Image 1 (cartoon, chains in turn green, brown, purple):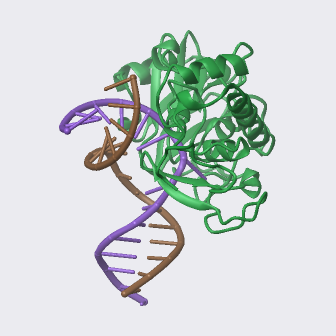
Image 2: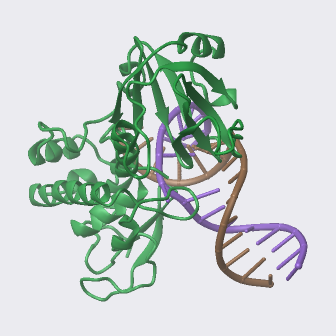
Image 3: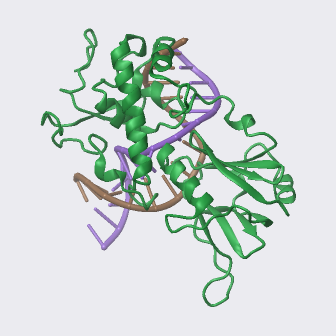
Length: 285
DNA sequence: CCTGAAACCTGTCTGC
DNA sequence: TGCAGACAGGTTTCAG
């Protein structure tokens, strides 16, 4: 599900309420619950369950697609992968009875004031880390798209250091943190770049255009609280702004050519064959 | 270094 | 109606 805009939306809601949510800042952990221990990565369940008790949630931030919770002196990191979500609710229902767990609830922090934050993940791809330093988990991530010193020029230079198809490169979190399948397709469309273009054949002008497009689609995604698709993520509005994603066969908004879908690196890839021309000697299309 | 395939999982939708 | 098969917002690992 979640790419940078969806994760950012969740982080903001957990910080300040919003999206119908409740802030968890300042709440103290009474106890943690592991409903599916397999979600815990690189740490013993006992350490996690023991060390979280009595700790205050001091901050909620985002790095790439990771959520980072400052809890006491340590950090809880959560990656939602394909189907994960976080919700905050009271531990008791309206009748005063203990609220039941939902199907696919995997982990929860129960707070002293009667609230709880629950990690739900149908596909079991999502993971949770409990670490002394967030860098242990996010240290190898590429730059943040909105980072100040990540300039269009820096982006161009970084593209030149690889010789890879642009689409899988943009999806590679070590290259750039935060983009997923939706926003990558949308950004490449906006920049008029074919998804198979080798990164080192992208011109400075194209790089500048792509850099702007990436920031554009991510900003618009955040402004619209992310994209709601299928049954996984709700509350967002960006799906109504898709130009190519999941629009196979529909007319391109710019030139009217039917949008095509191909597979690139095993990921469904949507593009306009007319607006996003393949570079010269690429045999594809 | 680069690409593609497979694996990790469950839910939903399509087509026969 | 039922059921097999395809497909899904992500990441890691391995073979060639």
